[in-house]
Length: 167
Image (cartoon, rainbow, N blue to C red; front, side, top):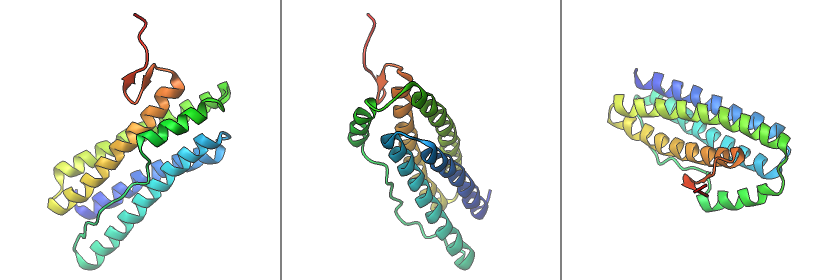
C-alpha cells in the first residue's frame, strides 16, 4: 500500500469511528455519557483534520511532514471521576444503550488500531512515524472505551484491575 492509499484508508477508519461516537452522543440522554461520546468523536475529527492536511501536503509536494498529534482524551483519573458521577444517573435502558454503543465503538477502535499497526510495519520511515502516533492514541481510545464497557457490563474490572474477588 502506498502512502496516499494508507492515508485515505486511515481517513475512512477515522470517519467511521467518529460517526459512531457522534450518532451515539446525539441519542444519549445521560449528560456524562453524552460528554464522553462527544469528546471521543471530537478527537476522531481532529485525527481526520490532521490526516487531510497531511494528504493535501503529500499531493502538493510529494513530502510527508509529520507533526506531533495530540489527543483530547482525558486522563484515567478524569474518566474515573466522570464514571463516579455517571453511577447515579444510569438506568437499565441507559445501560443497554451504553453497552451496544461501547461494544460497537470498541470493535471499530480495535480494527482501526490493527490497521495502524500494519501501517507501522509496512510504511517507510516517515509513514511509520506518523502512523505510530495514531497507534498510540488509538490504543488509548481502546483503553478508555474498554474501561467504560467494563463499568456498564459490571465485569468486576476497573482500569484493567479486578475490583473484587468472590474467594
